[in-house]
Length: 176
Image 1 (cartoon, one colour):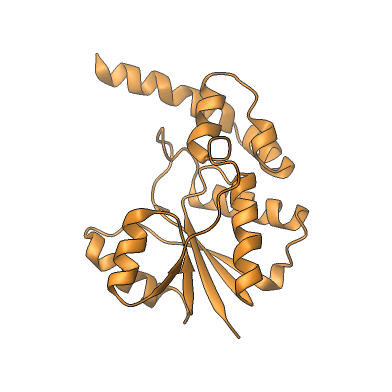
Image 2 (spheres, one colour):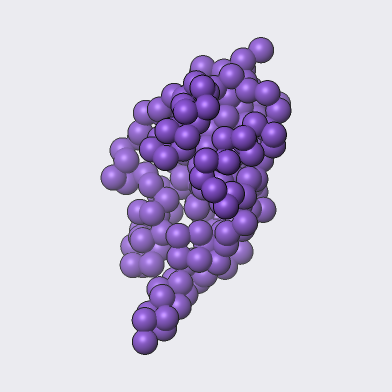
């Protein structure tokens, strides 16, 4: 059985992420979805907790018809040293064959350790990025079409819209 790892922060999980999961599952039999920077939340670039991100992923994949027996979400915190992260990944995740990521640093670190790394084709990258989703929430523009329906519902139900919008005020207050 081939096993893959998809690495991301999923802040929040959007339609591009859903397509990335589907792409990875075309290449492997089982997928660990690694929720990076899991210790971070309530920040402008990381507004959601690891638990909230796991719930978003589950809701999106369930509604998207991705079989739950084909994947598992695993939160992983950042390490003090970038060079230690590949080893931390290996000791945290059961054995895997390949990693799916588009992050340049992650790719370099994993390849230096001899891991097989595949880039994931982007789905309309200018639209489907978590940064764009967060920015659209901040700017009070339509963001819901960029995420699976259950994710939009969840973001609203946990006060995520208000949380993201409050981040700009915190950033401005810090500049004074």
